Length: 119
Image (cartoon, rainbow, N blue to C red; front, side, top):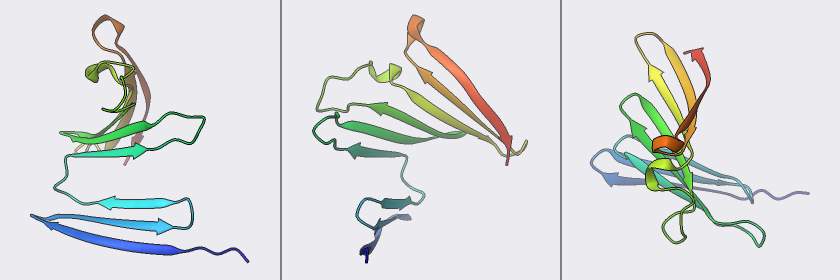
């Protein structure tokens, strides 16, 4: 029989900031981050064959942005403004969401609209 261990932690850090973490099985981590946090860094430590990665999730005026880089402990692949990004923009009055991906900065900037959907 397969064993699934689970652990839940809820933390209230004051000022309306709260987070919940759940270890759901041996390789699944679930995190809920409430309001009051503008930037969240998630470090993914690699095994032997991959490199460490950082995912930075940032709330923007119109939605969220996810940037990927190697982080502060390694030389980045791109300058800070040029890291690969996934932007999710929410237009509440129009009840629409839009997703775009981008990389680079200045003359090397490239962006692709991935899609739109009603919300």
